[in-house]
Each structure stands twice: as structure tokens, then as C-alpha cells.
Image (tube, rainbow, N blue to C red):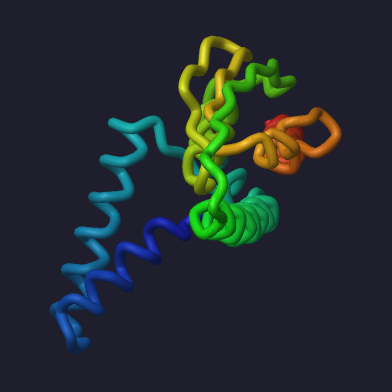
Length: 163
């Protein structure tokens, strides 16, 4: 239990060698154990953190699905804006987020920037400044429509529950 990283290192060792012999397996076990030990010592890696990360996989998968869906929707909106004869009407929007952790606030800024037609211009604490290609893209920034924030809150809650 909790040795997923060790097993992944060992499987990669075997995969990169291309064959399995007793010698390759023994060296692989030794090297994988060394990599695991160095990771624990130098990078603060631990079995508890590994298990917490595995526990977050369903929320991470859901966040990825939401991000892909929003990217597709935004791509369609950008294509529509490009092929319409109207001049672009760029807007800036500012809002505050309820996310507590710096990492999740940065993840929200990244999600906004990865979504076509929007760019995170500034992130200062909980305050965001967002540039949108047109006013239609401002709709997703309303508090009740912030789906990225809702998914990131679930990730935060899961992390707090595992501590």
C-alpha cells in the first residue's frame, strides 16, 4: 500500500529495458527503491501524500472533463466571433474568488487562460483581472456560473478531508 510510485518506476525500468531477466529485475528493484527514497528525502514526498493524490483522481478527472468542455465551447464562440463581420468588442472583468489556497487560485487562472478568448491579466491574492474577446464571454464569470471554481472547491475540500 502506498508504493504506487515505486511500482511505476519499476515498470518504467522494465519497459525501457525492453525485456525481463533476473538481472534487469533486480537492478530495477534497487534503482526504483533508490528513486523512491530520494524523492521522499529531497522533495518531501511521502506515502500519505501519494495516497491523498490518488484520492483526488476522480475530482481531477472531472476537472479535466469540464476544462475540455469549456475549451470546445469557447473555441466555437471564438470561431463565431472571427467569422462574423462585427468588430471585436474586448472587455476587462474583475472578480474575487472564494478559493483559499494559492495553488487552486493559480489553477483557476490557468483554466481561464487555457480557454480560448479569455486571458488572465492579473492575479493578486483572490483578485483576478480577466480580458475577454467579447461581452458574451463575460457570462461565465458571474458567481453562479463559475464552474471552474466549483470544481476547484471540490478538489480543495477533498484535500482538507484527507489531512
